[in-house]
Length: 117
Image 1 (cartoon, rainbow, N blue to C red):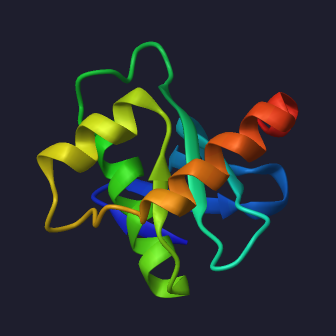
Image 2 (cartoon, rainbow, N blue to C red):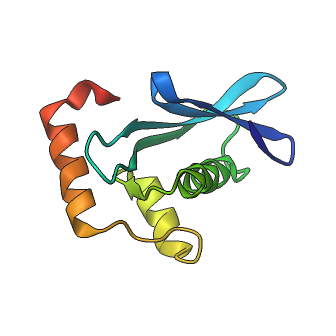
């Protein structure tokens, strides 16, 4: 579990979600899946901040933590989530672009199994 201020991040890989927790309460989530082909990737498909917690930077911290997890695992992030994609575009130093073939494979996997998230 990692932290940003009073927010803690918990990766629930089996459930395909990275949670932002404040005082034990989930206040945000990145829904994702793991690309099932080599070289692998973490694929962000949806970012949500719970009502009443918006405007505090939680979504940005979630996406940043997601990229840190991927970097620690040595795999790229494919930001299919519009918020994650816009965050990555604003922070290219923290969010290296995934190779085009990895992005294509992630899109194909999601198209074949839309229930991934």
